[in-house]
Length: 168
Image 1 (tube, helix red, strand yellow):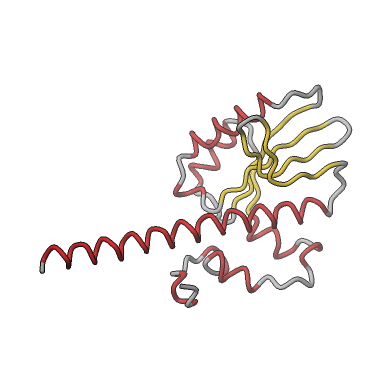
Image 2 (tube, rainbow, N blue to C red; image 1 turned 60 degrees about the horizontal axis):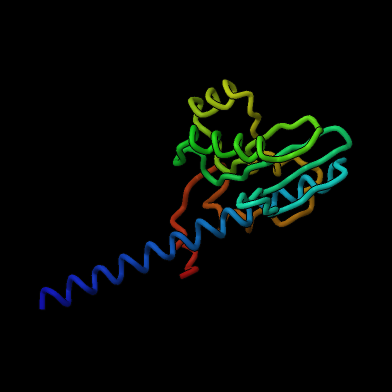
């Protein structure tokens, strides 16, 4: 019947949405771990990953004797409301109680459009493009980077349909 056909279509679409959400969350988590790993090899006194302070979740927190840096990891800034993301990050930074110099940065997988870079510059927020950074970072020299393409959708920020890899 028509009703059963519509219910089947809705069930399949719901499954696809859940799969996309799982992939999106997994990408975010892997990006946080890549960021954490890369930064942990540098000269910080403290590198924390997935920190919960009050009700805020902080992706990566870096500390030196005099500085505190909050790193927010975003897979693709081009499909985000960057003004909202900047505001959330600044709020997290303002809530962090310390006498150290504080700043926040974004680490993206996908290179942001110039308009987003301009907004970040206006807000005095730095950013890194992780997919480009790991190509030349000595920390990643002999690591298996090609497998990351499967998770993140291709080298040089090419987006591939995740189902091409038969993950679902």
